[in-house]
Amino acid sequence: MSSVVFLLTNVFPYAKGEEFLENEVSHLAAGFDRVVIVATQTTAEATQTRTVPDNCTVLRAGVPRPGGAAAAMTVTRGLAHLARRPQGLPVHPGKVATESLFEGRAQNSLTRLVPQLDGLRLHAEDHIVVYSYWFHITARVGMLLAEVLRERGLRVAKLVSRAHRYDLYPEESPFEHLPERQLLLDAYDEVHPVSDHGTALLRRQWPRYAPKVTTRRLGTKDPGALVECQQDPPHVVSCSFVLPVKRVDRIPGILQRADEATGDIGWTHFGSGDQLTEVKEQAERDLGDLVDMPGYVPNSELAERYRELRPVAFLNVSESEGVPVSIMEAIALGIPVVATDVGGVGEIVHDGVNGFLLPKQFTDLEAAAALNSLVTMPAEQYRGFCRAARERWEAEFNESVVYARFVEELRLPPQHSGRPLPNVGG
Image 1: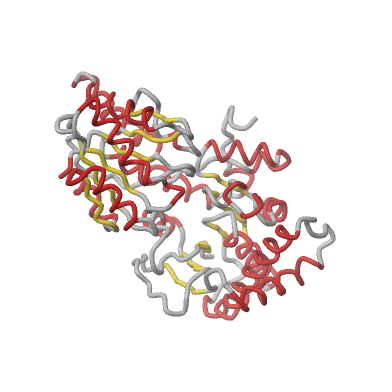
Image 2 (image 1 turned 120 degrees about the vertical axis):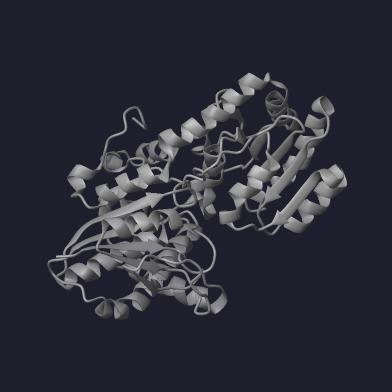
């Protein structure tokens, strides 16, 4: 008997994205005899950009979100499947279209995946786990895959899914509607948001399924030597895509207000995105040579760049987050954080301990005051913030601990793998 886990991803290990899976996949490979990675949203031209362990098989099964005539055909296919279900369709036409596109995309992925299953040489005695990285289209593909495997006489021990942000918070979706929630919650044995905030939300929205919803955190690798953060001269770092939801365009105004009290504060932002050119031009007008926006920098190089810059703080002013890996990586290096209290950010940043939290709708003055507190506080107090940052990472986000434990749970029967979280979501 072999243990086999199917890992359903959007694009990993192709192209860019889902970088945090690079940490987890090695643990999956160590815990299972075989790992089958199914990338559900890749183009035919996409090349594999990440290496995977030797016992991993990578399958390509799907395309990115279609447009034009392809989208219409996908909606039609999805609608045909939905129309056969007894529970009927939503009343809102936009939600009907969203549900239909969702189902059609999942069915298209299954069509591409099924012919590749014969080459895997699976056996009836194999212990198979289906693990979706997202509680969205990958989860629906995983559900369909499990049905096919069981029809072939194979033993699927359980279905497990993580949930992050766009696949968890309705306000992140068109018409504030996440498709086929009840269908997925019925089918999956365990659903694991990556934050207590997400767990509480899902339990509150779907109390019937609360026992199968528990937090399982993401983790980052130990980066090695900590950053020797300094208060003088003060420098701030940030790392994210430059997109409207990240509100990177707010940072120059924040730093201008902070400068009024403490003098010049430098800023380096790592990350590319649609707004990069626009925000960079604005920042250079406002801050001159105090700003550096180099665009995309490989994750493997970030820690050393932070060590060179010796920042006083890591800044994140996103309007919405799940549990940001970028903040985990910052605290692992002992960098205090100033961030908006959205999603699971407050589970990484403890206000007044390893950084400061800002309200979602903060003012520039509020953010500047938080930064200035780190710049001007007594040196020993500041060093305490740095120590607390690293200690928080070691306690909750060390990948060698959280992923090893998660993989061990994946191998267990459903009734034994969920550890209830007291006081989360009722």
